[in-house]
Length: 241
Ligand code: CTP
Ligand code: MG
Image (cartoon, rainbow, N blue to C red; front, side):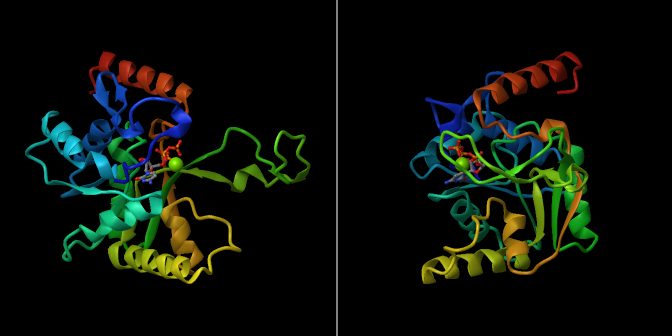
C-alpha cells in the first residue's frame, strides 16, 4: 500500500494518508478495506519516510494489532514507494495487490474480484469504471485556451482504480526494468507511467480489466473528502460498517 505521498492537491495539512475521514485516518480505512478480504494475508504499508514510527503506532491504535501488517519507509515517487514495499514481501508470496492508501472506501468485492482474476491466471488485473464525462486530448497550454487534438470514443475508455493485482514476479520484473531505465536515463521520451499496470503494459505484458466500483474513488482534492465523508456516513447509517 503506497501511503507515502504528501497530498499536495488536497491542500495544507498532514500527509494525505494520515488525514481523517469520520475521525479515522485514510490509511486505517484503506488497510481495513484490504484485511476484510480473505484473499489478503499480509499488508505492507509504504509510509512517509519520516513517519514510519507514527504509522506503526497509528495502526496499533486502531485495532489492527492482530493482522499481519508491516510498515516500511516509502520513496520520493509512488513508483519508488511500491518498489520498496514489494521488496519487503516474503519470497513465498506469489500474488500481490497494490492499493492506494488514498482509496479508503474500496468495497471488499473489488478486492476479491481482483485477487480472483490473478488466481485464475491473469498476469495483471485492474478494476475500472466507465467514464461519465467525454474526454478530449489537447495540446497543453498553460492558462489556455488549449487546442483540441481529438475525442476518443468514450465507450472504449475506463477510469482505473486500485487495488491492481499482479503475479508477483511480473510486477517485480517491470519495476526492476523501470528502475534500470531511469538509471540509464532512457525513460525521457516516453509519457510518464502513473500506475503499476501501466508499467506492465510498457514492457509488453497483458493487463485485463475487471469491474471497479464508484466508492473506490481516490481522495485527491478537497471535494473528494466531502464525498468520502458522505459515503462513510451513509454506510454507518445503513450499519454496513
Ligand atoms: N504515494 C506514495 N509515495 C509517493 C507518492 C505517492 O506512496 N512518493 C502514494 C500516495 O500516498 C497515495 C498513492 O500513492 O496513496 C496515490 O497517489 P496520489 O493520489 O497522487 O497521492 P499524493 O501523491 O499524496 O497526492 P498529490 O499528488 O496531490 O501530492
Ligand atoms: Mg501524487
